[in-house]
Length: 159
Image (tube, one colour):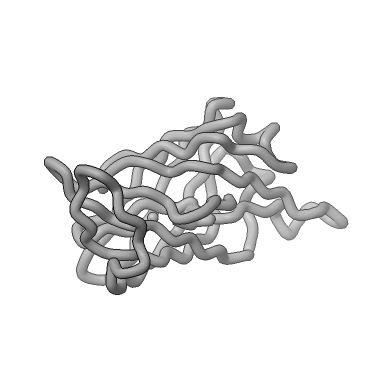
């Protein structure tokens, strides 16, 4: 909260964060090209999100979708997110976010706009080891209220 969100995979909330980020092959794999996975949709709340419609060079690591569990300190606006991919592999990201006016967020019928969040993420661990790398990625999301907090990506998110 890409994640962005993301990327990342991954978006942020006034009370929490979602994350999307781009993923890369670790630097210790000589001559390896960057792997990325771009997801067309991120939905969820401050405790669980879904990334779907994922395709790209890293899809063998991720499959077509994943479930994201963010853990964010709303005071520092930093945290981590764990993605469990359709393949069963995981990605761990470090995240930070900033919020801004919701003016550029699209109107969603039945929802009240709260804020726009830009999340910066970096893949730091997990069992999908070919996705760990030094590159940081940004994602944009919008936060809405409707019987709780809801998060939606703006555009595609790359991990």
